[in-house]
Length: 185
Image 1 (cartoon, rainbow, N blue to C red):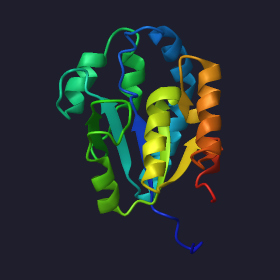
Image 2 (spheres, rainbow, N blue to C red; image 1 turned 90 degrees about the vertical axis):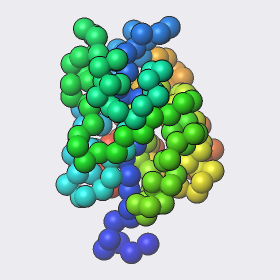
Image 3 (cartoon, rainbow, N blue to C red; image 1 turned 120 degrees about the vertical axis):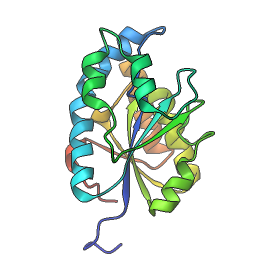
Image 4 (cartoon, helix red, strand yellow; image 1 turned 180 degrees about the vertical axis):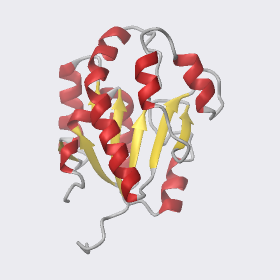
């Protein structure tokens, strides 16, 4: 790899537009609060470098890749402060997903190939479900993976740590904190 030019990264922000209205949603919400600032710092760094930021989100039965409608459906008294900070910007990509993986039933792989991306930075919730399943599918497609440990959350801290361990040991993901951008492989 040529060290003078960083590899083409894409930041994936998974399911952060969320209503947390489900079993264990309160726990996940509590664990999500500390990851917002590190994700936003990564997003700012990506924007400075001109690298893509891609939101992949559940569709909340709307089935429209219109983030303003999904934001409206997910905003409540608890989520409004989070959603107000983490919402996509005009230059960000936004895809909806029908299941856990960001790749399943989406145009994500086609978009990444179009952008020339080789390394994915996965962030979001839930670390032990949607982030883990997305990492698995990315690994199967031969993307390099960086999972900043301070940028994913699960309802259970133990499950979150287990997911990080699985992504490191099985999917060959680089796991460290987001302050080490860009990751060295």
